[in-house]
Length: 204
Image 1 (cartoon, rainbow, N blue to C red):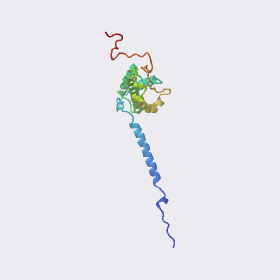
Image 2: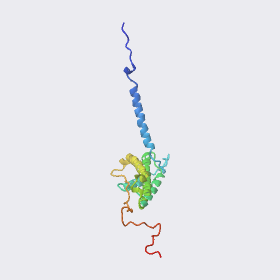
Image 3: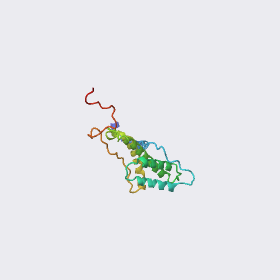
Image 4: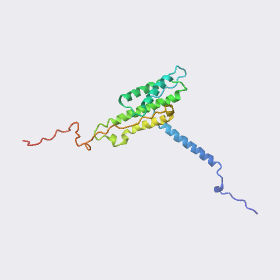
C-alpha cells in the first residue's frame, strides 16, 4: 500500500503572500509620501480658490512672481526692507484671481514665496541676537531652527517649480559677522557698568 505524502506547511508555496507583500510596500511608500507632504508648515496666506469665471489675473501674477523669484536668485535670505517688500508681494499675489489652468502652478509659487518670507522673518529674529555679547546664535544652531524649517519647506516646493525658472539658484541662509565678545577682544567694553567702580586711594 502506498502512503500519501503529507505536505507540511513549510512546503506550501506562498502564492498569495507575494502580492500581499507588494501591496503592503506600496501602502508604506504612500504613507511616507503623505507624511512628507503634511509635514510642511501651513501657508497662512494661501492663494485664494480659482473663480469659476474670469476675468483672471494670470499674466499679472506671473509678471510679479517671476520678477520676485529671479530677484531672489543666489541671494541671502531677505531681511529688513527687502523682507517687508517680499511679504507685501506674496500677500498681494495670494489675493489674485487665477484661472483653473494656471492655478496648480500658481499655488506652488505662492507657497514658495510665503515660505521664503517666513524663513527671512525667523532668521532676522534669530540674528537680532547677534549684536549681543555671548550671542547663542553662533554657538547653538537651534536658534535658527525655525528659519531652517521654513527654508526646508521652500526647498520642497522649489523642487516642484524649478523647471519654470532655468538658471535660478535658491536663496541661502547666512549669519551676520560674529561680533567680538569679552573672551575674544581684550579691548571689549560693556555698554554700561552695573555698579560704579570702587574708589581708589585714601578713603579718608
